Length: 506
Ligand code: ADP
Ligand code: MG
Image (cartoon, rainbow, N blue to C red; front, top):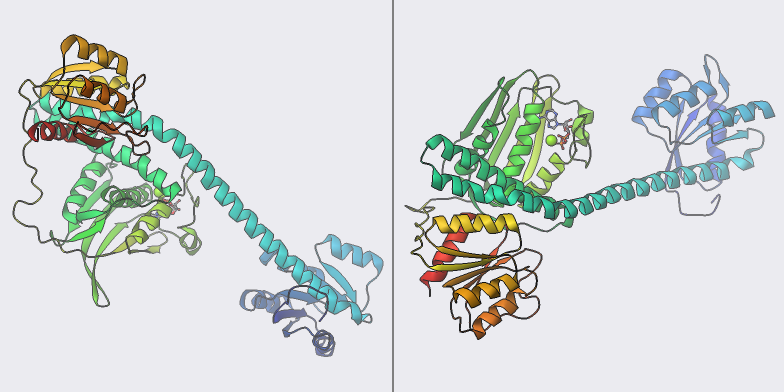
């Protein structure tokens, strides 16, 4: 075996050579040296181009001059089609000048026909070098990709905290608006704000989970309702010349997935579709039953009449950071695929350049034969002047909570830290319920509750908890107080319910 190193396997060697005898001589030399190889011979441009597309050699060995074709031309064609495939000149006549010229033009080596001993090791070395170059490029690519993902993770982590706080009012204000107005138009606008707030917040969360790779909790999603929500969100940003068509063939169809993630898949696909139709057209989202072998599934199609995609684009669609848009992220479809596959589904695409594109989602079916009245939420009992102490260092949230709860009929005391809370307690006595953020300064939530317990408090406590910072991390959970944990972000309805439940179970 020529040269030492990893076995090369069976090689495909393309000979550019007009003389069949010379070609045979070269192949015999290589086989005699112990290389495993198969050979193909061409002697003109058409043959070479065809061989390079159909045959895909590991190496090209070329004569310098042939009637009507030259080795330099062959080299140029190879470099244009496959820049990484090695190329060696094998010639009967090669002066030093020609050899230098050959290397300068990008050949890997040159061998003189009457010195055949050099050929096998030169072939082996050129192939090994080319392979390790490809491997190096692959590793470098992989590294770049993971570095980009890593910086994205850092960015996401940094941003998400600030974004959570910024988005918080969007979750709370709509409830306040609804309470202060009966005007259906204003109530509808409040719904849009609430939905966007929820979506924004959960997008931050799912971006974090994407980079961390964790799974979102899943729930049963009735497609009819999901489509309604998507329709509402799309309508507010739909260009005039785009005509939206939503259709769910059976209103009992349901699937098991994370609501926000699935909604995001549909929004991503719809947004891509809208962007693909700069001159307008029809965007349709259709959900219907589909059979996939024995198993029933739900088929959702998001179709547009836009610019469509060529084969090359279709092949790279789902690669991270692949985008054809000036300000695209190239992450939309990657996350769609991750979400769909995480619930055991598939995503497929059909596209025709100039005609349009249709993305098809196939998801395992979960029949939802809704029981009468299911999904109706029982009304929340209003306050009757009960005293509430709220302790939270986030000023916006504190004032929103104060406003919202007082409008529900509670008497409020607000404190921005443990010390202020203690002063309130000493001045005004114990409340009926205490609502405390888990991250308050000066006293921890646990210490505050312990102090209150020492003062004789036996009522309930509601603790607002961050997903990544459990309450009572200091081990100070009080034993004589019943604690209800409420995860952030807050939605007012959930706060109202928690307060009502805490009082009700008292
Ligand atoms: P981005 O939208 O940020 O470019 P995506 O992952 O959502 O990232 O999409 C990747 C690429 O796929 C787009 O840049 C576009 O070239 C192509 N693409 C996606 N959806 C469509 C569509 N409906 N019509 C035409 N091209 C599309
Ligand atoms: Mg996109």
